Amino acid sequence: VEERVAGEMLRAFETSAGLPLNSIVPVARQLQLWGAGLPMNVLSEAPCVLDVASAAGICGDWLVDPSVQGAAVSGIELAEAIARHASGNQQKDIGIPADFDRCMVAVSSPACGAFPGVPIEDAVPPVAGGGGGRGGGGGGRGGQAGG
Image (cartoon, rainbow, N blue to C red; front, side, top):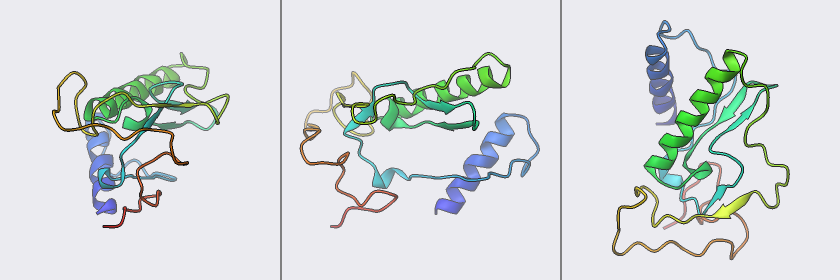
């Protein structure tokens, strides 16, 4: 599934950017499917991460808000940062924490996949920060929680 989804996303990007299909060959990639994620914390630094020296970027709901809207906002912010970098207008890194021990904050949204401001009656987020790690209960790195 990961190969198929990653390929479809890459081809869609090439099409939307007006590039020939199969013209982008990633050096590395990591795809995290939604089934393994339930962010309880978000990065406090920025809505995306861009390391200008290595031309590497990260986007995702865990950088903004654990929701579809959070993922979209993060992706748009990264796309805009890449465009600024490509035109020479983005010289500084974005979102790289100065203090990795204090760069995450508890989420405020009601549930993964929710849109902020839309009430969900029976969805109460778990309390963040109470058990080490970043929550979720899964094994991380694409693992799924048992059960």
